[in-house]
Image 1: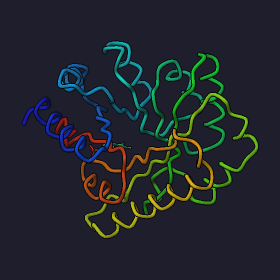
Image 2: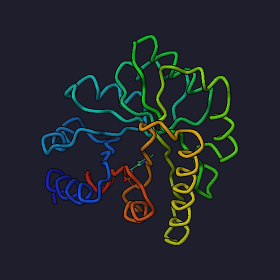
Image 3: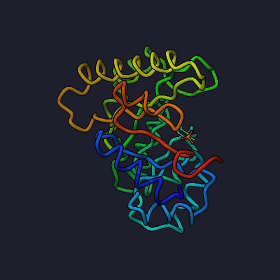
Image 4: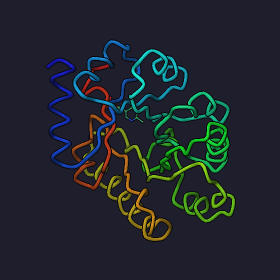
Length: 221
Ligand SMILES: *Cc1c(COP(=O)(O)O)cnc(C)c1O
Protein backbone atom coordinates (compact mmCIF):
# COMPACT_ATOMS: atom_id res chain seq x y z
CA UNK A 1 0.00 0.00 0.00
CA UNK A 2 1.18 3.54 -0.62
CA UNK A 3 1.30 6.25 2.04
CA UNK A 4 -2.15 7.66 1.25
CA UNK A 5 -3.92 4.28 1.38
CA UNK A 6 -2.02 3.22 4.45
CA UNK A 7 -2.83 6.38 6.38
CA UNK A 8 -6.52 6.19 5.47
CA UNK A 9 -6.71 2.58 6.63
CA UNK A 10 -5.04 3.38 9.94
CA UNK A 11 -7.08 6.54 10.49
CA UNK A 12 -10.28 4.51 10.12
CA UNK A 13 -9.05 1.78 12.45
CA UNK A 14 -8.04 4.31 15.12
CA UNK A 15 -11.16 6.43 14.74
CA UNK A 16 -13.30 3.41 15.58
CA UNK A 17 -11.25 2.94 18.74
CA UNK A 18 -11.24 6.67 19.59
CA UNK A 19 -7.44 6.78 19.58
CA UNK A 20 -5.53 9.77 18.18
CA UNK A 21 -2.84 9.29 15.55
CA UNK A 22 0.47 11.11 15.44
CA UNK A 23 2.17 10.33 12.12
CA UNK A 24 5.88 10.12 12.90
CA UNK A 25 7.62 11.71 9.92
CA UNK A 26 11.25 11.82 11.10
CA UNK A 27 13.71 11.29 8.21
CA UNK A 28 10.81 11.58 5.73
CA UNK A 29 10.70 14.33 3.12
CA UNK A 30 8.21 17.21 2.98
CA UNK A 31 6.75 15.54 -0.15
CA UNK A 32 6.04 12.33 1.76
CA UNK A 33 4.49 14.35 4.58
CA UNK A 34 2.30 16.20 2.06
CA UNK A 35 1.00 12.88 0.73
CA UNK A 36 -0.21 12.03 4.23
CA UNK A 37 -1.51 15.58 4.68
CA UNK A 38 -3.60 15.34 1.52
CA UNK A 39 -5.00 12.06 2.81
CA UNK A 40 -6.35 14.05 5.76
CA UNK A 41 -3.61 13.67 8.37
CA UNK A 42 -2.83 16.81 10.40
CA UNK A 43 -0.79 15.67 13.43
CA UNK A 44 2.86 14.89 12.70
CA UNK A 45 5.66 13.96 15.09
CA UNK A 46 9.38 14.61 14.84
CA UNK A 47 12.19 13.79 17.24
CA UNK A 48 14.83 16.37 16.23
CA UNK A 49 14.32 20.10 16.72
CA UNK A 50 16.29 21.18 13.66
CA UNK A 51 14.45 18.81 11.33
CA UNK A 52 11.11 19.81 12.86
CA UNK A 53 11.72 23.53 12.34
CA UNK A 54 12.91 23.01 8.75
CA UNK A 55 9.71 21.10 7.93
CA UNK A 56 7.48 23.56 9.76
CA UNK A 57 8.91 26.33 7.56
CA UNK A 58 7.97 24.69 4.25
CA UNK A 59 4.75 22.82 5.06
CA UNK A 60 1.11 23.97 5.50
CA UNK A 61 0.54 26.00 8.65
CA UNK A 62 -2.48 24.02 9.80
CA UNK A 63 -0.27 21.01 10.57
CA UNK A 64 -0.13 20.22 14.30
CA UNK A 65 3.47 19.50 15.16
CA UNK A 66 4.37 17.13 18.00
CA UNK A 67 7.86 16.85 19.44
CA UNK A 68 8.39 13.24 20.50
CA UNK A 69 12.17 13.11 21.01
CA UNK A 70 14.40 14.25 23.86
CA UNK A 71 14.44 18.03 24.13
CA UNK A 72 17.32 20.10 25.49
CA UNK A 73 16.37 23.28 27.33
CA UNK A 74 18.47 25.46 25.04
CA UNK A 75 16.43 24.35 22.01
CA UNK A 76 12.97 25.08 23.37
CA UNK A 77 13.04 28.58 21.89
CA UNK A 78 13.07 27.22 18.34
CA UNK A 79 9.80 25.29 18.67
CA UNK A 80 7.98 27.51 21.19
CA UNK A 81 6.29 29.72 18.57
CA UNK A 82 4.34 26.87 16.97
CA UNK A 83 4.60 23.48 18.70
CA UNK A 84 1.28 21.81 19.61
CA UNK A 85 2.40 19.11 22.03
CA UNK A 86 5.76 18.19 23.56
CA UNK A 87 5.61 14.48 24.48
CA UNK A 88 9.05 14.26 26.02
CA UNK A 89 9.10 16.52 29.09
CA UNK A 90 11.31 14.82 31.63
CA UNK A 91 12.39 17.49 34.11
CA UNK A 92 11.16 20.54 35.99
CA UNK A 93 14.05 22.50 34.49
CA UNK A 94 12.78 21.77 30.98
CA UNK A 95 9.21 22.55 31.95
CA UNK A 96 10.30 25.92 33.36
CA UNK A 97 12.06 26.77 30.12
CA UNK A 98 9.01 25.76 28.05
CA UNK A 99 6.88 27.97 30.30
CA UNK A 100 9.28 30.90 29.87
CA UNK A 101 9.38 30.61 26.07
CA UNK A 102 5.62 30.08 25.82
CA UNK A 103 5.08 33.25 27.81
CA UNK A 104 7.31 35.16 25.40
CA UNK A 105 5.05 34.13 22.52
CA UNK A 106 1.88 34.63 24.52
CA UNK A 107 1.03 30.93 24.20
CA UNK A 108 0.18 27.99 26.43
CA UNK A 109 2.12 24.92 25.32
CA UNK A 110 0.70 21.43 25.73
CA UNK A 111 3.08 18.99 27.42
CA UNK A 112 3.16 15.31 28.29
CA UNK A 113 5.39 14.08 31.08
CA UNK A 114 7.52 11.23 29.80
CA UNK A 115 7.71 8.28 32.18
CA UNK A 116 10.48 5.72 32.06
CA UNK A 117 8.77 2.32 31.70
CA UNK A 118 11.31 0.30 29.69
CA UNK A 119 13.95 -1.95 31.18
CA UNK A 120 16.58 -0.46 28.86
CA UNK A 121 18.40 2.41 30.53
CA UNK A 122 18.88 4.26 27.25
CA UNK A 123 15.31 5.55 27.23
CA UNK A 124 14.65 8.96 28.77
CA UNK A 125 11.90 9.72 31.23
CA UNK A 126 10.95 10.31 34.84
CA UNK A 127 10.54 7.48 37.30
CA UNK A 128 7.46 7.40 39.54
CA UNK A 129 9.12 9.20 42.44
CA UNK A 130 10.50 11.98 40.24
CA UNK A 131 7.13 12.41 38.55
CA UNK A 132 5.33 12.87 41.85
CA UNK A 133 8.02 15.18 43.21
CA UNK A 134 7.66 17.36 40.13
CA UNK A 135 3.87 17.52 40.38
CA UNK A 136 4.04 18.38 44.09
CA UNK A 137 6.66 21.10 43.78
CA UNK A 138 5.73 24.70 44.43
CA UNK A 139 7.72 25.76 41.37
CA UNK A 140 5.52 23.58 39.18
CA UNK A 141 2.39 25.15 40.64
CA UNK A 142 3.61 28.56 39.50
CA UNK A 143 3.93 27.70 35.80
CA UNK A 144 1.12 29.44 33.98
CA UNK A 145 1.99 28.93 30.31
CA UNK A 146 2.24 25.15 30.12
CA UNK A 147 -0.64 22.71 30.20
CA UNK A 148 0.05 19.14 31.29
CA UNK A 149 -2.15 17.04 29.03
CA UNK A 150 -1.04 13.60 30.18
CA UNK A 151 1.78 11.07 30.14
CA UNK A 152 3.95 9.43 27.50
CA UNK A 153 6.02 6.25 27.59
CA UNK A 154 8.11 4.04 25.34
CA UNK A 155 8.07 0.30 25.98
CA UNK A 156 11.14 -1.90 25.80
CA UNK A 157 12.15 -2.87 22.29
CA UNK A 158 11.63 -6.62 22.69
CA UNK A 159 9.69 -9.42 20.99
CA UNK A 160 8.40 -10.39 24.45
CA UNK A 161 4.73 -9.34 24.25
CA UNK A 162 4.11 -10.04 27.92
CA UNK A 163 6.83 -7.64 28.98
CA UNK A 164 5.52 -4.88 26.69
CA UNK A 165 1.99 -5.44 27.92
CA UNK A 166 3.11 -5.15 31.56
CA UNK A 167 4.96 -1.92 30.86
CA UNK A 168 1.92 -0.37 29.18
CA UNK A 169 -0.30 -1.62 32.00
CA UNK A 170 1.99 0.02 34.53
CA UNK A 171 1.85 3.33 32.66
CA UNK A 172 -1.93 3.26 32.39
CA UNK A 173 -2.26 2.59 36.14
CA UNK A 174 0.09 5.46 36.86
CA UNK A 175 -1.90 7.71 34.50
CA UNK A 176 -5.15 6.89 36.31
CA UNK A 177 -3.57 7.46 39.72
CA UNK A 178 -1.99 10.77 38.72
CA UNK A 179 -5.27 11.94 37.22
CA UNK A 180 -7.16 11.28 40.45
CA UNK A 181 -4.45 12.75 42.67
CA UNK A 182 -3.41 15.83 40.71
CA UNK A 183 -5.80 16.55 37.83
CA UNK A 184 -9.19 15.52 39.12
CA UNK A 185 -11.00 18.64 37.95
CA UNK A 186 -8.84 19.25 34.91
CA UNK A 187 -10.47 17.97 31.70
CA UNK A 188 -7.26 18.73 29.78
CA UNK A 189 -5.44 15.84 31.43
CA UNK A 190 -6.75 13.21 29.02
CA UNK A 191 -3.84 11.98 26.90
CA UNK A 192 -1.88 8.77 27.31
CA UNK A 193 0.67 8.65 24.49
CA UNK A 194 1.86 5.07 24.17
CA UNK A 195 2.37 2.72 21.26
CA UNK A 196 4.56 2.74 18.14
CA UNK A 197 4.38 0.64 14.97
CA UNK A 198 5.57 -2.56 16.62
CA UNK A 199 3.37 -2.39 19.71
CA UNK A 200 0.44 -0.01 19.17
CA UNK A 201 -2.22 -2.73 19.24
CA UNK A 202 -1.02 -3.87 22.65
CA UNK A 203 -0.85 -0.25 23.77
CA UNK A 204 -4.46 0.39 22.75
CA UNK A 205 -5.61 -2.76 24.56
CA UNK A 206 -3.95 -1.33 27.66
CA UNK A 207 -5.64 2.07 27.39
CA UNK A 208 -3.56 4.26 25.10
CA UNK A 209 -5.37 7.35 23.77
CA UNK A 210 -2.66 8.44 21.30
CA UNK A 211 -0.29 6.34 19.21
CA UNK A 212 2.86 7.48 17.42
CA UNK A 213 3.27 5.60 14.16
CA UNK A 214 6.14 6.03 11.74
CA UNK A 215 7.13 2.97 9.73
CA UNK A 216 3.57 1.59 9.61
CA UNK A 217 2.59 4.67 7.62
CA UNK A 218 5.69 5.73 5.74
CA UNK A 219 7.55 2.43 5.39
CA UNK A 220 10.88 1.55 6.93
CA UNK A 221 13.40 4.26 7.66
C1 LIG B 1 10.51 6.99 15.89
C2 LIG B 1 9.56 7.08 17.03
C3 LIG B 1 8.25 6.56 16.92
C4 LIG B 1 7.74 5.84 15.70
O1 LIG B 1 8.41 4.64 15.51
P1 LIG B 1 7.87 3.55 14.45
O2 LIG B 1 8.42 2.28 14.95
O3 LIG B 1 8.43 3.94 13.13
O4 LIG B 1 6.39 3.59 14.48
C5 LIG B 1 7.40 6.71 18.00
N1 LIG B 1 7.79 7.33 19.13
C6 LIG B 1 9.03 7.84 19.27
C7 LIG B 1 9.39 8.51 20.56
C8 LIG B 1 9.96 7.72 18.23
O5 LIG B 1 11.18 8.24 18.39
